[in-house]
Amino acid sequence: MVNRPVNSDGMTGLLVTTAPFTLPKHTLEVGAAVITENSHVPDFTVTTYPLLVAYGLSSSEIALRSAFVDIKSADATKSRGAGDTTISYKWNFRKQREYSNAPAVSLFLTGILPTGDKSEGTNTVDHWGARLGLSIGSEVALEDYTLGLYADGQIAVQDLSDSNARDRKQLFNAGILLPISKYRNLQMLVEYNAMGGEDVSHQFETNYTAVTYGIRLVNERFNLTFGAQFKHNLTAGREDSSKVFSMMSVKL
Image (cartoon, rainbow, N blue to C red; front, side):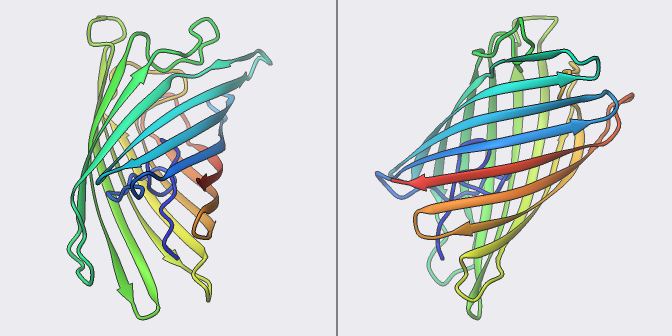
């Protein structure tokens, strides 16, 4: 079953990992998700409700992600509001040829717009942000199954004109996708995720390594994915945390 739905950033991929493949030309995909992160030290719960829209072009795709954010802290205070908006472009400049295991390669660029509510603390950037990434992946035929292997690396910058808020960091994601049912419409995914180099500590974002796993139900146009992520936070004073993902999308 070939269906490459959008990930939590709005581009085609797994839950977090960006795949090098793109949506077919003139294909519109609309998705929605609920992502909840729980932490005990510091004690908070952040629930994000992203809306995802992607459109396929010739060997490329564009994606838009906006979100509503709900934050609950240990002292019972609550804040909620709009999150930041991202616009992404992915170019698949090296395709995987039919019957070949040689990987496809894509370049992608993401811009982050400061639409988050600063007074409520639901923003991640103060002025602007950007990420530049490279994605590589291959879909390997194994008898009656296809194993997907994907990885991406990104360099992220934000607010470089502001000495108090500017930051640079690196992100790395890698994952596999494997059909586990007779008709290949039920799939299992496992990912490794990491972020490092962050200098400006954000209340809900730190340097980390993580393992993400999930189950995906697909047909040619519909996708339903459930997953969980276990984060090992690398910043002093932060204990490990966990995330839960629920996502669905439809190709129009």
